[in-house]
Length: 305
Image 1 (cartoon, rainbow, N blue to C red):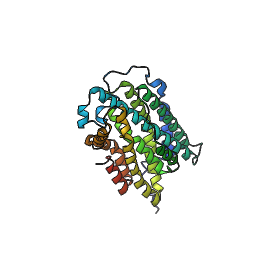
Image 2: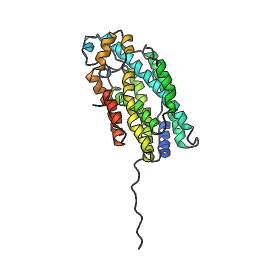
Image 3: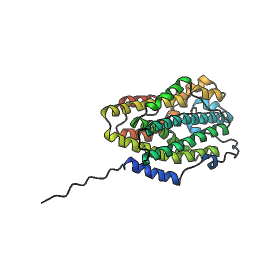
Image 4: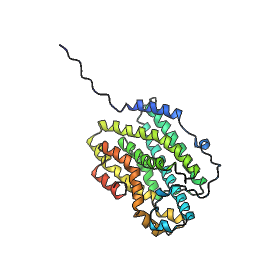
């Protein structure tokens, strides 16, 4: 008597080529050209913020209570310009990492084709961010010499799961915040348009990176797991330093040292960072990628409670 072979449950995670094909089809159906999708000629509205109050670094501090409405709006403009500048740096680094990844992929396959599609999205996003900085009457925040040097080297180290986790750190934290704030009625309409486009297209990028992590972890060596589990924590101090620095308060015309000190110790700002990181933190935990060192670094940077 023969017995039927055991049936194994299908994997909840389809092969990466299948994921890529589905995401390419999604890109065909729903992609945007910011040059025409955003009304760049619409006037800015008086009294409206460039970022919602609750995500501004000084919100909830004694210094915030002393600021006039005009000063608060000016600070929101500078913080938006800084966030978009950081986004430009990140997407530049990510695209160069993806280009290096393509050297190891089949150029005729759907995986490579979606990587190229994502890079095209990111190029349009960089254009959109630069145009928005100019549109709101701000100036970009530039990388220092040391940061530029590190940015040149970093793509060469972003391989395998490090590339995908690095992509998630740069995408998910901002995405979570944008989803919460883009419908704020006090937000400048042109900024809300940018956020809607970015959220729509980043959803595909996040899906691709998450699937990349899951598939890579299935065959990852002990050493790769160890490195990813702990090195991802470097994202905490990097994000903290990038998003809250003295240049923002200087350009907004505030008392720089006082503003920096109160923003650094702002409990509300830490809570917003924790909310933004929550989804990614859960994903890392679920896949065994929140190591002891990483947890300590994310917590020290205010992204974990």
